[in-house]
Length: 373
Image (spheres, rainbow, N blue to C red):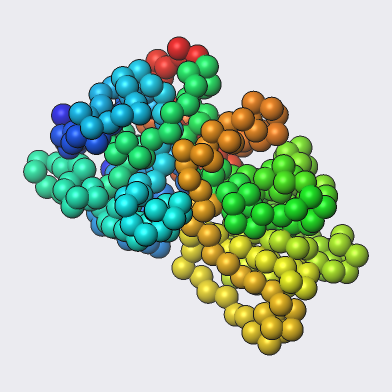
């Protein structure tokens, strides 16, 4: 079937909305989803500009939300009319999936970042020619086809337009804290960068009972929002030395945990220097940048750990409903980071994401959608 999709024709090109994209036929374990909305993530931008390359032309988008239209004959957990949030695809059968760690699926790259479907077939074509996909999802579309395991069912009383980023940005930030770092009540955490991922990590630190939650950024308006969302302290690293400020806020010790979401070399290194003895820093940005470590002082003497985390070590079918429960209880107000844009405003929305003007742009693809219906 023909669909409308936002296509990046070549590296660095703007998004171009086209109506001549052919969507693959459904397979037995597929779910066809009418897209309501999609968040724009910095990973989309990384692929658009070529920091990471799948191939071009490409249909990006991996923070989608929508309504199930059709299901394949082998699908057991979904039916037409269900509201869903889309996330990454994991095979479910490899050693790591069977251990309950789908973010480490041994076929993660092939399934999500190869530009084709997990079985090697095209997700999208145009005039018979290959068009690459992303995350076996590509949510910058009016309709998409995904595997059953890409989907997470959500209650129909929730506003689908707000929920898509739970499938990536919000679950990545919060999962890094809740699933990987696992701070105990009374411990301390600093989050570098207060975009969607950073604010999600910060809120998760607050939920975990950290008594010191420090947000670090260079934009005062974002730091004000961070305080509203649970930061006990904020540091504008453009105006003061972040490491010194964090040490001062922690009686000279440093924090037990740090999360870097910026991918900036100097900032990633500061996230390590700001740790207390035995502290752990999670560097989770999609970035081509590298860091320089003093293995004697940073790692050995101070017994610090630097870890990478993919997608918050999350199991979307568990983690996303948990975040929604936190949201309903007023503990995870992720929607305060969001701003809606029309689908044809995608380049404006992406520019606002790049500049930091908007923390989490949401493309409303179906403007006729009515929340709660």
